[in-house]
Structure formats: structure tokens, C-alpha cells
Image 1 (cartoon, rainbow, N blue to C red):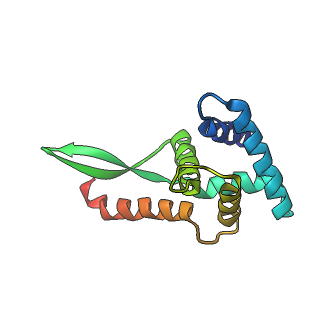
Image 2: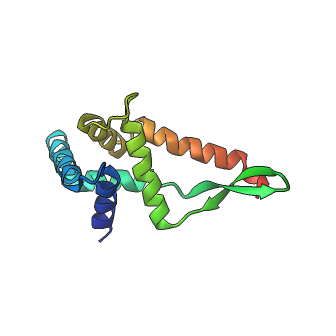
Image 3: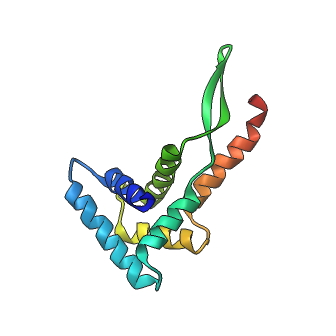
Length: 137
């Protein structure tokens, strides 16, 4: 059930100009390229890399007087999944805003093998900001 939810959420995040079939083809070729790169099941690589990217807290703006503070707050499961997908897709974009198959495949594989990548750095930045702003709670 959870794999299906993450898969459909990822495909729906890839849709551009209403082309869901193109997004589904992109996802299926992504799984095939992951299968060629690793000996593990590609859906497992996708699922566990998304699980490891989900943040536990996020920064929520709170107004105190006339000043806005970013306060760390827990988030729901749906939002955690949303931010994990957002981290992957933003990290896969280049300067022109294109998401390519090779970049997404490389990101998912590096997240699964726990090597340094841009998507995991975004999660670390969120945690650092949450630690810095925890006094505003």
C-alpha cells in the first residue's frame, strides 16, 4: 500500500501540462535503469530512498508581534512524503529546469547507498535551520 502511494505521488509530481502517460513512462524507464544498475529490486531502491529522505520536522512561519520566526514543527506523513519527492525533483533539475532520467536515477541510487548527494543535503539544511530556530518555540 505505501509503495503504491509513494509511486503515485511521485508520478503526479512529474506531470507537466497534463501529460500523465509521459510521467508514467518516465517512471517505468527510471525503474528499468535502476534495475540495470543494481541487483536489488528497483521498487525497493525507490521506496527505501524515499523513506530515508523524509524529514521529521519542518519550519513553519509564526508571527510574534510584527516579526516572523521560522519555528520547527512536526509534519504529517503526507507532507513528509511530499518534501522527500520535492527534494529529489529539485535536486535533479539543472539550470534550465529539466528533470532528466539519468540525474533522478543517480540521485535515487546514491540515496539508497547512503552516499553524499544534493537531495540529502537539502534535508540536512532543513534540520540545521530547525536546530538553530528551536529557541523560538
